[in-house]
Figure 1 (spheres, rainbow, N blue to C red):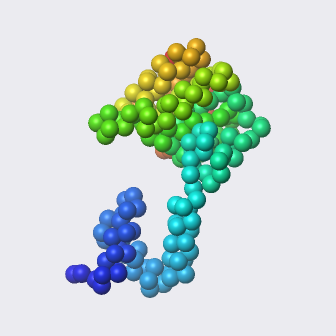
Figure 2: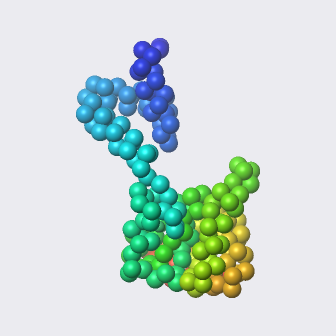
Figure 3: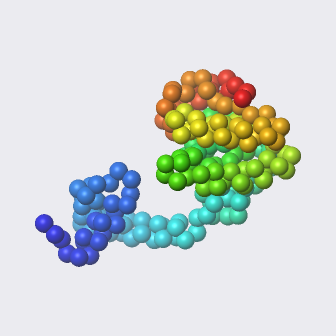
Length: 198
Ligand code: ZN
C-alpha cells in the first residue's frame, strides 16, 4: 500500500541510514509522526546543522567543526608518533585504550581498486606531505586486518619507508578479517604493545 506522497518521501529519506530497510523506515516514520514530533524536529535541525558545519580536520582528516580537531590542536600529544586508522570510529577506539599519546591520520576508507578508491581518495598525498615535514619518527598502521586493510597498510608502509621513518603494524590479537571497532580494548592494547616493525 502507498502512503501519502510526503509520508512516502519521509520513509524513502530514512532509508539512507545504514541497516534501515523499508519496514524499519516505515516504523521510524510513524513513530516520529505519532509520538515523537519534537525529537524528530530536533533530529532534523541537528542533522542540517551537522551536515552544513562538520568538515575534515586539516591535519588528520577526522570529522570536526573547526580547522583543526581537538586532538591535533592539543599540546599534550607526542607529535613524533602517528597512528593511521581507517575511520573516525577507529580513532575513537584507539583513544579509548587510554595509553596512546601520539597523533592520528584518518584515511576515511581503505584502498579498493575495484570500487575505484585509489591513494588520492584516502588522503595519501596529504599523508606524504605530513611525513615530509621531518616531525614524525614512527608510524603505527592500525588499519583493519581485512584484505583491504592489509593491502592499504602494505601500500602505506612503502610510502613511509621511502621517507626513512620507522613503521610498524599492529598485529597480535587482532583476528584475521577483524575490524578495529569490534575489538575489545584489552586486545587492542596488547596489539599496540606487540606491534611489529615493517
Ligand atoms: Zn585532527
